[in-house]
Structures are given as C-alpha cells and as structure tokens.
Image 1 (cartoon, helix red, strand yellow):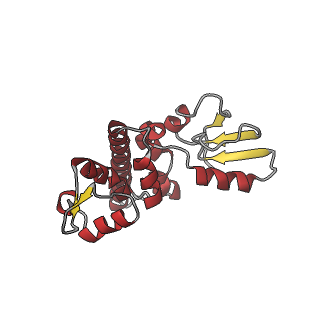
Image 2 (tube, rainbow, N blue to C red):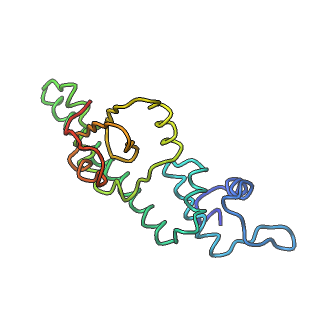
Length: 192
C-alpha cells in the first residue's frame, strides 16, 4: 500500500494512529490488511500534498455527504488551479527575464504582475468551485471586525463578507469579480 501510494510505511502508520486512514483488518500476525476502500481513502489523502493540514484532510475525506467522485473533481480542480497559477507565474517571470535581457528597466508594477490581477484572471476561473470558506478563518475575521460598521474587503471573493455591515469590496481581477456570490456588496475594480 505504501509503495502504491508513494508514501512511507511510517507515514501509513501515522495516518492509522491519528485515524485518517485505518486498515480494514489485521492479519493473525497483526499486520495491516488494506482493502480497495482503504486505497481509495489513501488516494483522497492526496489533499495533503496540496498543502492542506491533516485536520482539513480529515474533514474533507471524512465527510460522508461527499462521494468519491465529488472528492476527485475537487482534487482535480485544485490541481488544475495550482498548475495554472504556476504557468501564469512562469510566464510573468519569462516576460521579466526577456525585458531585462533587452536592457529594459522593469517597474515594480511589472515585477508584482505575477501576484496581481493578471494572475487571478489566468487562474481564477475555478476558484469558487474549488475553494470553500473555512470556519476558523471566518471566526477570526468576525473577531477582528468587532463592532465596526463599515468594512473594506480587499481581494474580495465574497466568501467572508458580513451581510449586516456596510461593505466596500475591492478586487482587481475581472474573473474573480464575476464569481462573487449574488447578494454580496458591489465590488470596485481596483487594488489596495
């Protein structure tokens, strides 16, 4: 199982200890006996390789309301998003290298291009399909807002906007602005 999943035996033991991937059975000698379902669950734990923490992975793969196909679609979307982000960043770096090779001074705006609106215009198409609000982040935001009546939401996907406050949303990417949920605050095409 470790070889098939390209993880160490020690990692499999760790997953077993924390209840993330438990073998279906044990042999008489006490060895772990894994079923096809165990292999499927271990494959789902590939979210870990996408930099999710183990708690998030456990929540994702432990949700009985989401079937294996939904997990695979979400994993695929996250991988495509990561690939598109890397491709967009490589393209921005290549443009900068070409400009420097020609002796042209690159502006700070051009240097930051790989992190701004153009990046999210390139990679943001699947954002709402692959990202979900995280309750712990939402709780931190609500705590930070306190009793503020007005909110400036910078980088505004709409996921964490309070409905009971006066919100000004700022998002430079047209692709990201187009995906804002219905009923959220109007969004200004700008950077901050």
